[in-house]
Image 1 (cartoon, rainbow, N blue to C red):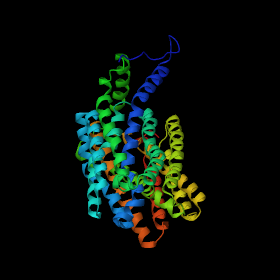
Image 2 (cartoon, helix red, strand yellow; image 1 turned 60 degrees about the vertical axis):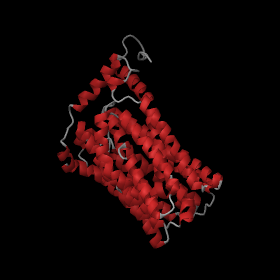
Image 3 (cartoon, rainbow, N blue to C red; image 1 turned 180 degrees about the vertical axis):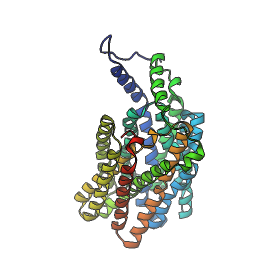
Image 4 (tube, rainbow, N blue to C red; image 1 turned 90 degrees about the horizontal axis):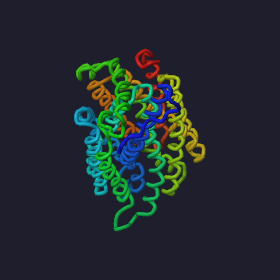
Length: 437
């Protein structure tokens, strides 16, 4: 379909106004589809937290077994992350993202057939293999379209999907658990995996036909629009380092970024996988009510993410905009322990924790993408994400083990809070000149 010319306020509209309009056009084209993809991805990744409410009883899974199974997803994710991102860089996002989504949707649906802890481990591991490369692939894909000072807000829009998946997924998962038990002879948690896996396959097909790999292939842009976008990206790329793969893996900067991200992901998945269980421990027993309550922290996180991202882009400052939400997340986790036996206060604390933890994530990605380019960016982003997501294995398993060992959530929350503080301090240690303040 032919592209419409950029809106102008007059014959002599300033270039900045024209570019702002152009980037709004690009964002409205890319953001809704990418956000939908990530909502589905994150929901398929963490819906096991809701499935646990019935699955643990039906399959006799202990908290430690569940935590290990929830986390083993990230071992598969870790193994295929870097090769997957390099493949995406070479074959294009359209084909590769479509392949990832269809594969993980199928694996997620097949999880309904697990009957033993071993089968649970295997399916979670395979789900990690299937989804590997999706998130770092999108982060890399955004560098093909946006310069750094515009990418922070777009990354935030994309990553609001994490929070939106909680807003949508909580009530939907609770509804399925409450109303589908026994339908066609299946447990409610089996229906959960099936009904929430189907959209991945459908949207994967949509991605194949709709997503454009690069600016130059976007037929919905005029030739002048493509030239402006490509010029902006190319001028920034010229200032970055396209590091050889061996150099990327040995780079202290990349390892520092990996440590920061691991700290934040510890908090993310500690809350993500255990939030329904924590809410239940405050005295709430109805599955649908748990689902509704679990949506509250994520809804608040959407607002916090957008406000902080806007502030970061306006001030062109990243480090403090990463660190302060991390510290706020730690405070929320600690208060969740103090107020553990009061549902209202515990929800307030969990809301603060979730707002802080999730807000750190999109702003974090403005740090490594400020100095990596080309194949080095593909490998570096994937390496940071894969190492960081090892926390997705460590965090739920550690929380589960501590909960089983102590009979309470306290130790796990203290551990997650400590990691959030560590991540914030490491973010402040990044040289300002490296990331543009």
